[in-house]
Length: 298
Image 1 (spheres, rainbow, N blue to C red):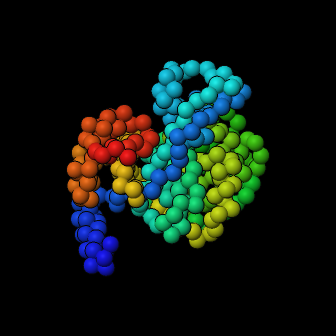
Image 2: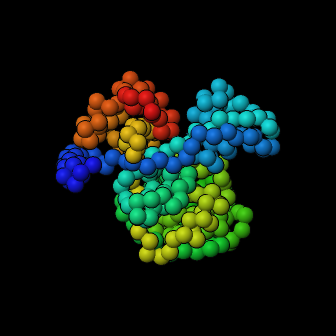
Image 3: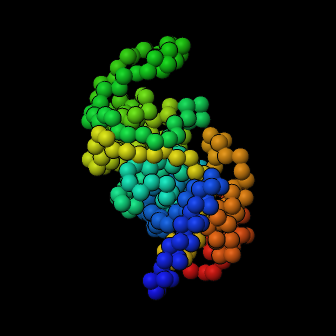
């Protein structure tokens, strides 16, 4: 491309980005994580546990393999897994968490250094949205039980504890990363089946080994962002257009998902490059997997 051509292309991208911002739309993504692969079932595995570990809903995993959601798996059974996800383009550096996607990305200079499935807050205890910083890091933490949980235990006739020491019964697992949102943090868990579901009281749960990995990569002062994007659109560097759709757990989005994608596509001059029948299918299924919706096959 000539120098003039590069300048024109850069100006066009800048104009499209400004238009998208003016419409209140998220930036267009350009990266993905995950892959299509095979998984050999081990003793004790279930669709729920495999899905929780790999960042895919158990129902979606069952459908991929022509199974019923409650199917019992057998050791040695081979499953198809597709856990491709779009990386939101909302943050070039730091910790990026997308609540509906149930994914945490660690970014450095726009590149993904880590990506992990998470367990955000249930509807009644929604995870807060916005910018944050890491203010505390503790290994083998003591859990200081919130007063609301102590009261809940008392009403249920359970033994009320004010603290839970480090160990297998500690809901924080082995790591606590405290955030500038008061009382909220990223932590491990002693309930790994709750990952990739909405079961916490607002904190971000991670698999024990993932929490340890993130703990070793961040430090106090690390910046981050928690966003809420149930539907993501990406144009990859080879021109492929991908769409990923999740349910709207906190019911924050009023737009019809397909109309939202039409707006985002128009803001980025992609309307003619999308197969809209494929896009409609993806937004109706809410599989939570990045799907190719290019009008031209790749």
